[in-house]
Image (cartoon, each protein chain N blue to C red):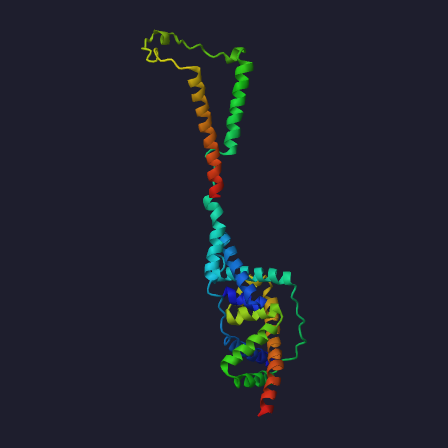
Length: 164
Length: 136
């Protein structure tokens, strides 16, 4: 889980492995500092998150965030039906690519909340953002993901049907 | 109300598709690499040599020695440091047979013994340094 979070944050396998390794060594060295006030996994995620941020700071990777349109049920349903039409394995790949196109912060929060199933409280602990801030970022991230899915999947689908 | 429904729908949509992504696993030797790195970190503390008598103790001992030498040399004549005289007369009354009466040691033999002892100590010093370098 440490590795998958690092991978989602930095996007490179080699770097994610290095970060995971650093995380485990840091955790081992600082084991005495873990007081048991939070879950061990949350503590480990926090170290991973910090190590990734340090790495990203060094690489100076920055993204431009798109202007996000209003979300309507119609848009969600349309994207949903398009995705349903794709084979599961391929769909997972598409979503993964969409996720990787998100800005680092939004991508990380989405990953922690939906994939790692961390609670809002745990995300607050890991990232040191306020709860309100996490909620705002989470909502923004969901909207961004939907926009990216629409942008990436719809043209593909049109191309696909056009060929038929 | 409508906005809440949108949020719920979007939440369900995101959850559904993110959960379909398969967890990535690191390379096979990942765990071995971590264990090696941890072992490497640990080694210095395991083999760290600690002297039996620390530097601090040596300083204290040197201080005590210096102070006592000063007292004996300068303060011996002062009245408050008069060491009571110990009567050692009884020693001359003990008659012990002198076992080494007939043995004579030449000056050359004495010098040889002296140099042998010195060289043993020199060897100890060099061997200690040699092994310290070898195991670090």
